[in-house]
Amino acid sequence: MLAEPYNTLLVIIVCILAALHFSGKLGSVNKSPTLKYMNEKYPKLPRYITGLAIFVAVVKSLILVIDGI
Image (cartoon, rainbow, N blue to C red):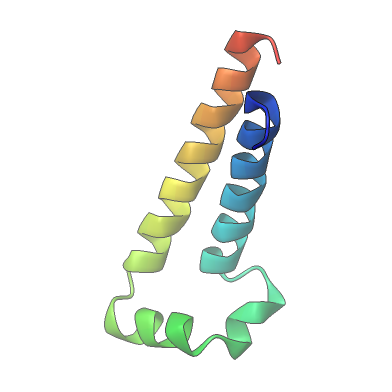
């Protein structure tokens, strides 16, 4: 089990990677059949997921700052 600051940093990194993936900035987007299907069937959903990932990363960073790392 990781200590709380390391756990929070891990969540922030995963959220940033998720936001990059769902916004189409990573190279894995072209190879992802699930993301292609999601873009065709529900075109707004990747934007919502990107926004949610960014929101979680910002909140977790604020928690780190408030707790004093």
